[in-house]
Amino acid sequence: MCAMTPTESEYAGRLRTAMLAGTKQAGPITIRQLSAAVGSSYEHVRKVLTGEPVVSPSLNQKLCEFLRLDVQEMWRLAAREKTRRRFGDLALRELEGPKDT
Image (tube, rainbow, N blue to C red; front, side, top):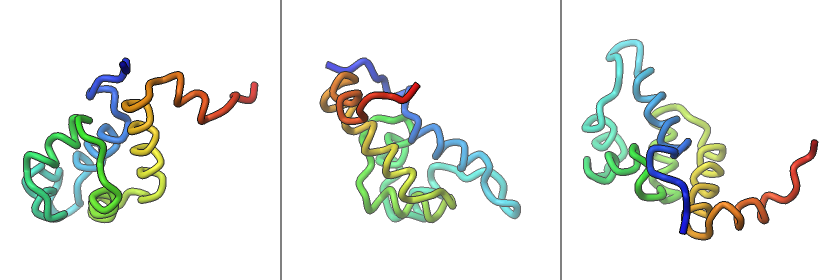
């Protein structure tokens, strides 16, 4: 139905990049540290980081606040990926409208 694979998730990629950047005091953030900080299971956070499930609004907010990412920008990415997974690339292009050239 959809050509997007979990490894193509821009949302997950941005989370992983922020985790690698980590903090000046502690260095890179582990999945275990992130899951504890946002109050979610290790396995659920691991799946989000591989692009498997589409994140919920509340988990998106918690992840973004902890990793200091823009909550609304990341939610737009998550919603775009959710639309692509559910309806495919053609539906996504229809929703986005024509591109200005």
